[in-house]
Structures are given as C-alpha cells and as structure tokens.
Length: 193
Ligand code: IMP
Image 1: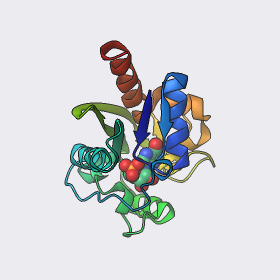
Image 2: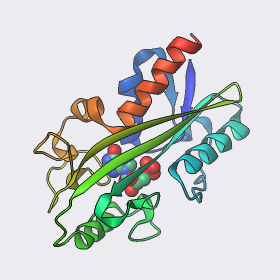
Image 3: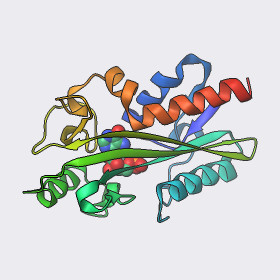
Image 4: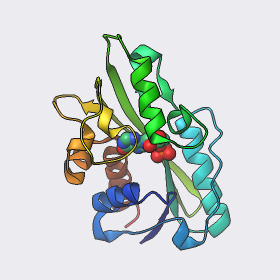
C-alpha cells in the first residue's frame, strides 16, 4: 500500500520506513509534488498532525499520515511542547533550540521530560489518531552525534546515553515516533489488509 508521509525530513522518513517495513511504500511530500511548507499553527500536537494530514489528503487524494512531535519538559510546564520546532526562532533552528532549552534548565534539578508524537492517518477519507510517548530526562550538555533535533540532550528512561548516541534501530525500538508508527502499522494490518 502506498502512503504519503507528511515530511521531507530524511531522518524521519528513514525511521518510519524502518518501522513499517516493506508492506507499505512510504512516499515523501516532495515525491508527491508538495513543495510548500504546510502550516502548523494549531495549539496542540494533535491539531497540527490533523491539519497536515487533511492538507495532503485534500491536495492529493492519497492515503497519508502526518505527525507532530513535541518535547514536554516537566519543570517548564510542558514547554517547548507544540512549539518545539520554533522554540528559539521562527526558523526551525535545532542548534538554537537546544541551546535555549539547556539555558532554561540551568540549575534546575527536576530534569524529567518526555517526547510525545501525535500521528494522524487518513485512509479513504477516514481519520485515525495514534500517540507515542517516551519518558526520560534532559541532560546537562549535548552528548552524541547521531539523530536530529533535541536527540543529543535527551536520555530515555533506563538509559545513560542520549538518543543521539543510539543506533537508528535502538532509538526506533523505544522512541515516541516508533511507538506511534507501530500502532499505525498494526492498525492497518488488522483493520484493512
Ligand atoms: P516535528 O513535529 O517533527 O516538526 O518536530 C518538532 C520539533 O521537535 C523539531 O524541533 C524537531 O527537531 C523535534 N523533534 C521531532 N522529533 C524528534 C526526535 O525524534 N528527536 C529529537 N527531536 C525531535
């Protein structure tokens, strides 16, 4: 089955393709001719994921799914949350975002945080929502070179290393997006195929 995934981020495409395996042909936005930025102005992760999926479905008529992810930090009342991509600037600047978060966490003892992904699937016009959460903590400095976004400053619960120090497979096995995508793939297998 062909499914459009609402991203042009190669890391995310790889992560998701690895989880769903060969049964689904995952296509990026570019591959289906959508080159403009899809607006993400909703106040919640769920709202943004739904808006993105609806946008693609209305433009292409293709079955599709979209996700929105936020890093929710307990000591910052859930921030940056839905604003994770534009935390420091309007420009999706990962380096500035990580720096700002580390600054705000200076001297803060409670480092508890979670990544949360909301994922919306549209199949033949019907909408389905899936969620994935991984709990962990914000490190005091960046560790590791892999991954993307906030990966170098987030250590999942039960691990001494950051997401950026894990292989793609290790991260996928426990990550917010991995969990949400596995739910989506399981749903497709049970309900439709
Ligand atoms: P988006 O929903 O994928 O656009 O992500 C929102 C923000 O969270 C961006 O700043 C991403 O870099 C960051 N982000 C999303 N997923 C991850 C992840 O798996 N690890 C680290 N940062 C992420």
